Length: 110
Image (cartoon, rainbow, N blue to C red; front, top):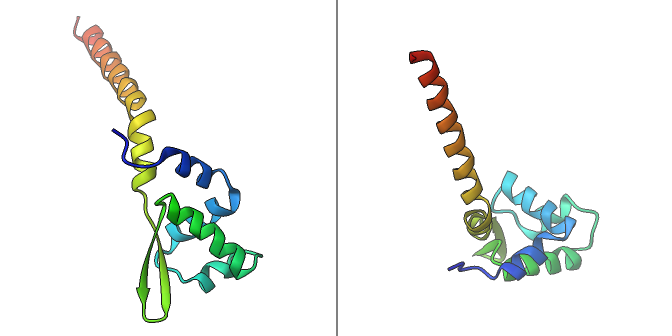
């Protein structure tokens, strides 16, 4: 059973600004709101609202360090979506390649 709220994850990922925030956190984890704002032409309040949506979807985790709040990418929800919809097809693809290789090797031994 999928442990994440898939609707919240997809809604959070649907916004290009939120994807840019996630890309920024992927490149450098543990950024403050100010550091994240430096990458975007938006007010702190707007960036904070986007981060709130990402936190609500469990795509961003935060840790307080003194007065600062550090933001980290949480890849677990995306991984669970991958397991649910993509991994199965990758396995079939790899099985097909393995079978093709066996057939080709069999032709050379015959």
